[in-house]
Image (tube, each protein chain N blue to C red):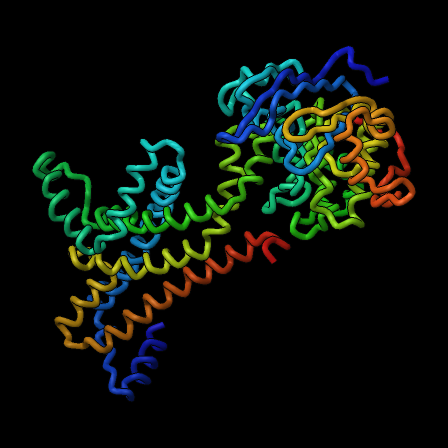
Length: 244
Length: 273
């Protein structure tokens, strides 16, 4: 492992890139820690955003205005304001108010705020993708489910949602790739994600270019991974003969 | 022998309008247990609307509908219709199979989730029904991989899987290529032979004549005339019926509907699967 790293650092040194800081145990540990934090952020926010998106989409297509109208308002406000501003607002305002109210008992860490804000923000985008999927399910297919005596929840779970997910999948994967990149805003409130760790290292070692290459490669690989998972899901959920 | 002693379906003075447009203007219709009843008439005459009223998919503004002992006009809300829909099968013009489920799963999902059948029983029933409609070799296929006629036969099997007392057929061959009409009509013909109560909205006049105990002719939202198939097709009493039949069937000896549509190989199957 170490030898391979040495060889690699040697190799790129020829291009004028100095990666010797990787031999420093402290720098390396903080970088690995940052990468793991980013992975945890991605996972939590992806699951959170999908849950939020599904709930919002159900509310959006609901015939009841008491559900549909607040959901519509939330989606519009959330989609049309910058995520970074939302994070500042949540962390600097809401978090402060919460701390004032409950003191040190405030359970929300900066990490949790990032997950919440990204989940809500990306959830709004998922909701629109899922709404399109839900509405693309032909009324006649739902009528068939009704004629088989499905209850409304059964019809949703066994017919409408499975079809809507398939219709919405490419858009959802798109959103999730964006979500991966969006986790970088965590660095703005000093969550030690991979971006924050990189900033810490380059301010001390003056190696912005080297760090930047690493950072971009890391996010790029994560995005490709999400894309690969999406492709795999698409192939798995493909409905043979449908829409061809 | 089919009889009208125990009517399974009774409509009395049913009125329905879409907005300001009246579609049904006082429909009276009776279907006895074990009967096959066809509703014929020009497009837009309200035939399919009648079927949709029978399971509460549409709500008439006025009139009484009794289906399998249930006063449909008194049901309110989606949930109230579920017991009725368990007992009344519906086969659609566009098949409306679930495209994300295999043929087998299309036949097992409702029996399992709605009737609560164990997975194995639902599966065995599904395979038996697929054999009945001659689709057992496609159990693992998906609807999108089947021809229209095959999909419609699966849709009939799906309706049968709920063990209904009555099946409604809504122009089930209208979307099919001509060469596939026969295979679907044969399956329906077998069902009526077995004594399944069927209400058919159809444009297949020869078929309606061949299998129906009663035929209703509708036009502009009213029943113009009804009677036995023999009576309605051969001795229509109303001028409008005569005109429609002449148009639909063509001149005698020059039938537009090929004879291959008429039932063949009627063999009794048992419904107890």
